[in-house]
Length: 210
Image 1 (spheres, one colour):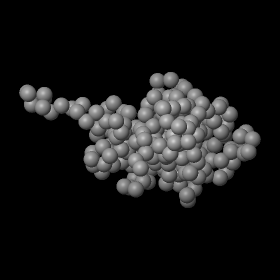
Image 2: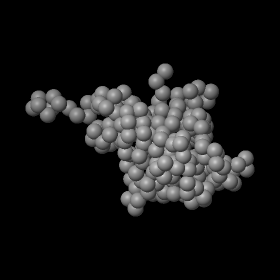
Image 3: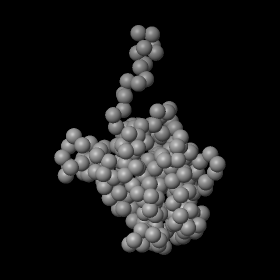
Image 4: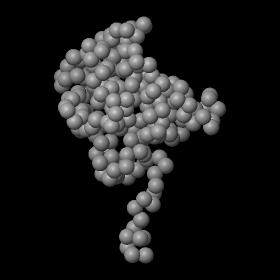
């Protein structure tokens, strides 16, 4: 079954359900960064602070005044993902990442790591990518997403891939920029990720004078 995309209105409802303890800061950064970057869950958890910090990394991140630059070794080879700063701190992926790194005291190695049982300390172990799927399903329920359906059916509609599909479906920009962000070799591949896409947004009939 094709999973639903996490659309802009969904992510805006999901993020406020997270607390502001250390674990909540981490999860907020994961959701916002994954959505804005159109990232695979494996790409999110494989990020290190710097290039070459750990053997298990397949990417690193650089933070600038205007945003963050992710360098990833993905299925199609190395690519750069640019994530600009958002319009408010509450939904800015770069601000969320900075908050997590600051309060978790992470300056080397894996960016997203486990926390202690009480949620007050960041541990050394890199987070498993299955955590992201569980996080999405839980926050979908907490935010009341797709409340038209029975609660038991709603989590199955979404997966880790829903963040990636969400960017493809929600970004109101030229398709080429979405294709580049997702690292797709063709526009047709990008279109497969788009849900609820207005297929007739570009009307060639009218453009041709009819």
